[in-house]
Picture (tube, rainbow, N blue to C red):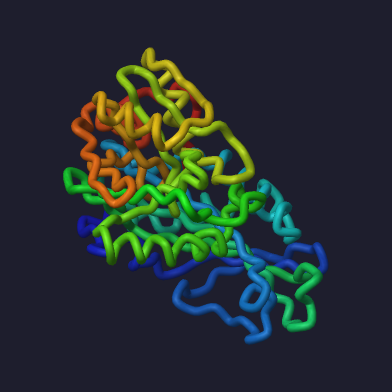
Length: 331
């Protein structure tokens, strides 16, 4: 068992990874190779025309030493949807699941104790070497799975400043539900501007005042025992952690409002004691401490409900609470 948590999230990797190539719709045999190398043609479709998708999951070590993957089936389903939406070869369910489970099984010693987790990054890239194919999908692809031992993405107990951005979009509205690198790149300029000018770690994109999501996480408002979050649309990623949160919160007596809401409503509720959190595989559930609205710091006065909800999720992930929804896959 790994006892040292890497200082930088996602910077250390298990030494090997599984990889499978697809040619003209036919998936090849599973191969294992070092995780620090990948042969790819300089004209590969993914490098020029963005044919790339990925997923994010985590495996957790329980007190008895066993290792469990959280929401494997949901992650596989979302990745297949992303592949189809990007006109890429869609990995068969069993192939993708088996690659992930076997990769984690072979890297069990890399799974940290209950201070961290093993981040799972399946990725699919278009590999056809053809710079004349801007108007057509790649006929070949590579599917591989990286593993990275991680701690907190946002350090718990530290200030989490989020800039509210009303003038710009995170990504093209019809692409938001696809987990592709271009969507993250699209948000990066505004995220760097927010960090430089406001010391904000994330940007909450709210085009024309419509509260949506940050560059890398879903956003949830907590007003007493009510959770308010944007309904699922093509504009933002359909977060698996978000869905898990809404399910568990409902189990514990919270009411759920999936609806559109504005920056003005959010500001008013925060002023009256509401809380806010970011949700995602990396972030888990991270309480927001400051929202920066129209250049002004708006303090989120409490994080108590957000921390309670975080514990409800992490207790399931680490096996401290019953897995009543069947979300854990034992390796």
